[in-house]
Amino acid sequence: MRKNNKDYSITEEKFEIIKKHIEKIDKIKNDLQKHINFEIPEYIIHDIAENEEFNHICLIINVAIVNNRLSSENGKYLKEKIKSLCNIQNDNDRVCWNI
Image (cartoon, rainbow, N blue to C red; front, side, top):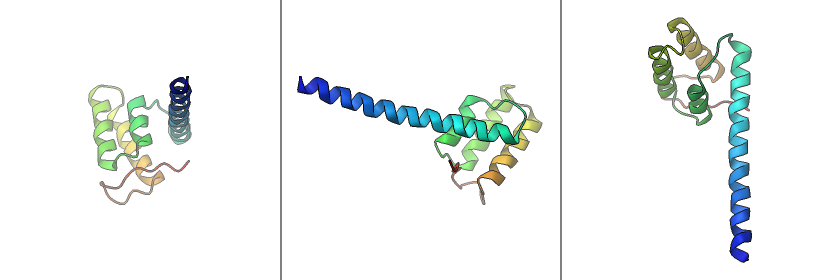
């Protein structure tokens, strides 16, 4: 019986971590949507939530452009907007979204 209680608490703990991560993703998406008027692919939002380097985010945006998920103009605008909103100084800076 003890093992079941332990497994339950670990499951609840993991659930809370996942729930907070999903809330963070939703918050980032909503915040970005206030500044732009086009749909952002989910995988870009996920990488922002993971605090990836700006260079990585730019590469992922380029992937979205190549895969016709974003226009090149929207991709360029998104990079500029992320850079300004997150106070990015160089390409190796981490994209930290203030929540």
